Length: 276
Image (cartoon, rainbow, N blue to C red; front, top):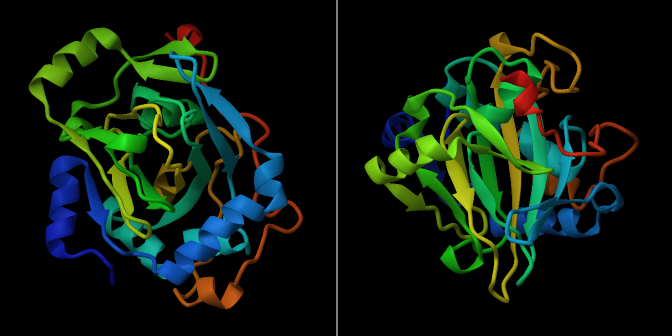
């Protein structure tokens, strides 16, 4: 199977739980994706604030389908789909996408968590899932870049607890020991870089206290054989219609039309107290 990732990058992902694919998207493609996030009325209309524990908040928009918008085509393009399939080891489908917008001085923090700590409750039986974070802006320590605990994907799914109305966090009692024993890596990215990380990789980010915004576009994939056992949350298997990499530039600044993207009206936060 063709892939934009080298054998060394694939090894790094499986060993560490994450890898960075530098310059996976060209400046021209990033300009289109950035403008779409800024200008698409549907992205703006479905913008939500996810509060943190320190009084800040991150603005997000979420959608569950990859349609014909320029950002839907980015999720469906061959370089993304092939990389996801190479790392997961089997055919994948689009699970969800979201804009994460940490605006200057106000962008909120994210507590330590695993994405599978959420997705397990969507009915995914296995963590055969990953996220691909496309940097739309420079992302570094000053504006709240993502932090990942190296090798934490091997720990299995941890219990999570509710910390705000819109955030769950990995069990603090476990995190105290994990942070002592494992290395935390700050994943600094330039526009066009893509950070790929495993669904069980523990990650967090600080507030953005800088004058520079930190916007990222995340696309998440699930193994087809790991399709949700429930149909409650609109993230069940829909075949991924893969397009050529050239489709992004060919589409230009194309916004979502109709209901193809299935935008979410609220963030999914499982009630972990009930589950336990």
